[in-house]
Image 1 (cartoon, helix red, strand yellow):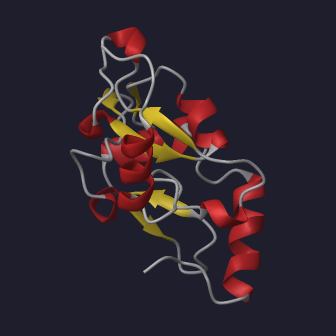
Image 2 (cartoon, helix red, strand yellow):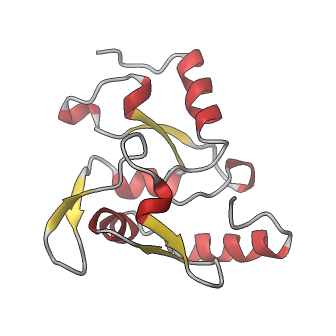
Length: 140
């Protein structure tokens, strides 16, 4: 298992994500800190460093996810896997509320991810409002 992500792999992950956090959809160009190349299945849980296990993640989502791969769905109160950007489609698990400032989870994985990663953090909601005002949000 490689401990570092190669430059080529970093480029691939960033290009594949179109410069957006693969969880909250924030564009890296408007973030105060560079995004991380995140192991979806953490190395501490035997996740490997390959394209299928890597995602572009803002610092907030990366910090809240930490080594988690599962969480409780707030509706069913049952444990479920968190959203997996390589194995699942974002639009099947999340939707923007009508004002496009907040996300809602559509599935157990989506709901658990919204709660666990705090995808409606106040700073994100404020950034989304600013991006809406200049026509950059929500993403297509």
